[in-house]
Length: 333
Image (cartoon, rainbow, N blue to C red):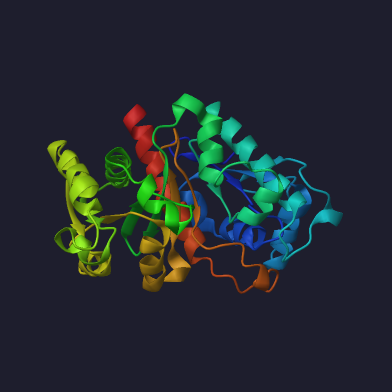
């Protein structure tokens, strides 16, 4: 770590994400803000030329050999000639996964307290033989038994959401739902909200069918699967309520009735959350041994290098992850 690191602060590993996306320039802007280092010590992992290109795109200067408030761990994953801004490529995907694995190694070895990654591109990762539904399952396999029930938590304007199914075809959602999966999504959200500082989170659970099944007229999943899972959570002192129709549960959440919402499938929550404000969203990959997260937006290939990508999601992700890492350190002390 740099000589001016603060032992009272958590240490985060940060990786630039897809070298062909806006991640490197957003990383540069985060590192250029002096207040960043009031919250955490940082270790940046990645290719020298990718990090330097990010600073150049952001209109900033950097000397990676010294004089910085962050540690730089050079890691060769992609040749400069193979960086093609604005395109999803296999070589970009290989770079993403190599940097991610190095950050995971540092976390497993106790060198860092958490990981923040700038946006990945799933198409590029699948080209690079990801071999899993998404990066969450890649990390869960990497951690093995050290990972609990894992899932993606999305955060927007103070509202947190988890989901029972994620990157799967909509036609498969009902068959993938189970009482255990719903209970674990509720528990995961409750655990992570507590880790963020909310002592007893209030959770709303969404239904699957229109009008929450209308007493069984439009489907029975609410009666047979969702309601029993909510009751199980309540029996374990989790303040969960539902199932509520998905067209009203977010109205209640927006009105302040809930700290978090559990949804049954990807777009059920994502559409509502992104309507609340696309630029500030954060994704936390819950169930891992250390806090891991990222800005919720994508690689924004269409604006790479233009210097117009919003930093808000990156700043929000950094603040949430440093708070969670600091709380984890305090709990272990």
